[in-house]
Length: 365
Image (cartoon, rainbow, N blue to C red; front, side, top):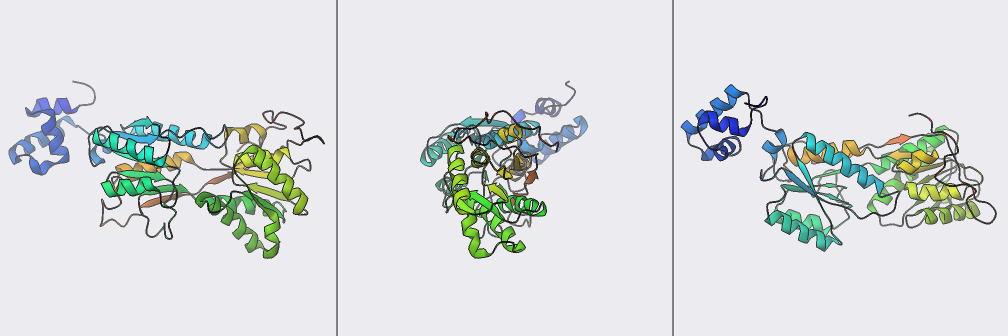
């Protein structure tokens, strides 16, 4: 017999099939009492312990989680979802679960993939990313009563107290509030923000962190804050243009916070005054160029997703109606501070050195 007994070992010891052993563990009410007693005795004598995840997932069909492989946005911002996928796969494997990747070109295409994988019993549940208000994917899964958890909140009016589904998200408000506080404690007063156009659930959440911290400190009148804010699409060139607009219209700037590392990298390029810049996502490029950035703690996000998918809720908000446990996890990010390095432009608007080469070594965390 193997060092760790298996279902086959239990079946042989009890004189039953593997399916009967599975029924005893998962649906004991359908097994005759004398057979159930014999199987339970074999389980006890052999010391058999099934994987907790396989025991908890509602369907118990494949021990497989489905998740869409997101298209690469760019080499910077897209790395966050790559890191999350790696963490999820690693932690799922430790629980005896597999991760099945699939692609989709639109929410409708992703729903078609849900239907195909669910009908074929290929997965036990799904993990969704890139959520939005009124997301058609979550509505479909809820209607079909299919287990799922999202990385990203529903962006409804009362997500925390009445979530529409199980979710894990990073507290963007906390991340930008902490980053603003760090600059204020370093002596900065006129702290600018480069963010995304509203409405954007994630972007608006991050902006509120900066805005609230600025109002709480009161270094800048509320009416003046509009001059310290620029909104733009995400991207390095967009961040460069936004920084140029700030320098032309905002007056003195002591520090700049950005909604992403892409925007922050762009801001550093158009920054001959070496104004401190802080990004968001703590991507590899942030570490390479000495950029302070807010880290999303994707390991903690992945752990929360798996807990909601394999624990008492089993991926469904109505699976444990008597439970008082929260049906969401809001992860607090952490600010990673590094010694500042700028990427200034020459008078012709060309970076004077490659952004891939750090000016100084990062400060150890």
